[in-house]
Structure formats: C-alpha cells, structure tokens
Length: 325
Image 1 (cartoon, one colour):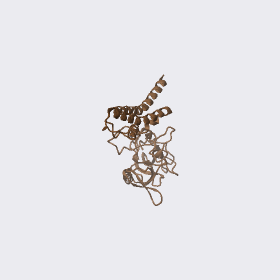
Image 2 (cartoon, rainbow, N blue to C red):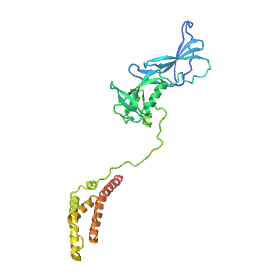
Image 3 (cartoon, helix red, strand yellow):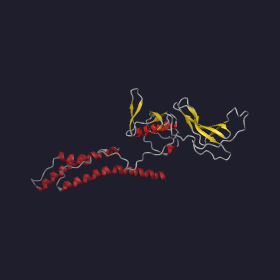
Image 4 (cartoon, helix red, strand yellow):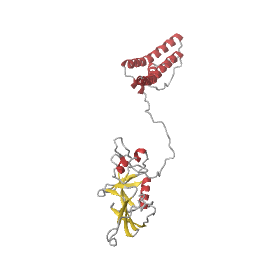
C-alpha cells in the first residue's frame, strides 16, 4: 500500500442527517493478488465513511485467516480543503497477516531446506537454515504455511517462450504465495516475482577452470579412422621387438663378449608395446645401439600421441578461415 489520494467532497445528499456519505479512494499503487480457489481477483482499496462534516472513518481491505477480503478499521480522518495528502499507508504491508495460511514453494536442498514425509504422506519441513528463517517469519508476522514442491524440482527461471519454471514459476503463476530455499536473485527472475532483501551472501568464491575429460591410454587411437594408419602402427609395434633382439645378438657376436647380457625377445616386444600405450619402461638397455632404437621408438610414440590433436586443431582452424573467406 502506498499513497491514498485526497478525497473530494461530493454534493450533499438529501436527508444527509439520516444517511452516511461513503467515498472510495483507490491507493496510488493498486495491489492485485490472484488467490486460491474462491478468492479470485482482489484489489486492495481504502474506504472512507463520513460520520460528520469533514470527519471520516477510514477502512482498509484486509485478508483474514480464511483468505477472505474484509474491511479493517484504520481510524478517523479529519478532512480540510487544503489538508496535505495521506502519504502513509493505512496499514503497513506485511506487518501482520492475521494467521493466514501461506502456500510456500520449496525443494529438498540440505542444508537450507530438508523435507520429510509425514504419516499422512504430506511433505513437512524438517530442518535447515531456511526452515528456521521461515519459522521465525511465521512467528513474527502471524501466519502459518504449507510446503509444496514444483513438478520439475528446480529453482526456476524464465524461458524464451515466456513460461517460468520451478519455485519461481509457482509464485509467478499464483500457485504459491512465497518461495524460499537458497534462491539467487537475477534479472530473469526479477521480471516475474519480487524479492526481499538478501539475507545470505557468499563472501568467498573460488573460480577454477571447467574440468575436462581425462585422457585415457587409448584415447589418441580414437582420432585415427583410416585403416592404413592402423596397419602401419601395428606393423611398427610388432617390428620393434624383433629388431632390438637382432641388434642385441649381432652386437654380441661382433664384440665376442660372453658377459654381455642378452635381452629376451618377449621383454623387448612388451616394452615396445608399453611405450605405445604411454607407459614407462621398467628397464632401458645399457647398450647404446639398443638405446638409440628405444629412443627413436619413444619419439615415434610421442608423435602418434601429438599428431592427432594437432591435426584436429589444424582442420578446425582451416574451416574457420574458409568460413571467413
């Protein structure tokens, strides 16, 4: 409720001493509320009943405990021709609700609002920060409440087609009188509902990069779809082990060194396969000819891992350039 317009005197009625002169003044900000079934469309008004010359009894509309629109006595008003306008609401809004039962839209969201099922199957508030806040409001403003959960179980926002979802949508469509449950204020929601002053602010916020999918050992191979590439990779893997074994035996024969260690073919082939899967080798040969082959194979494996993502970035860049041209 806001400003009440100044009442204008009407022409005197016949037999005015036997009748009361009644004037209705709409407030400057008309408050409309579409209530539950039976309430319909309600407009809050101020009513002035003349009791004597220039003396009026003021009444204001009020919703009682049954959500019925009634008149509430606001006191007397002495009217003068040059009297200032009424700038104070007859009854400050939201100071007392007369024991009304308000439908409250919530979601199960610990630690703010925890819901439980009652013996009759109805939802009941159990515990939480906003449960304590709602109970305190109900005690000081004299109202009771029942909780409902939106069909989608979301907080709600305004969609492109104009519909509003979640708890905010229930308040916007008058299916609930209020919603409380860690609701963040944003522009889309402010277009359809009114918010109270913020009562909870997060003073510390940590911003990190969005998590990306962790690459697995076989992810690079999914980038290659050509059969020729697969055949060459398999052939190279199968060739490295026997090549290392042949080089090791040839070196031992040339040097005629009996103490030179001989590496089994199975170990050499398995180590080559481990390198292809980006796994560390448990043992690197001490002989430099074998080391050069192992290092060359490791460089080849690194190229296999790097050329796939690099090719994707190059193709994406070329597409963007072609699109600009």
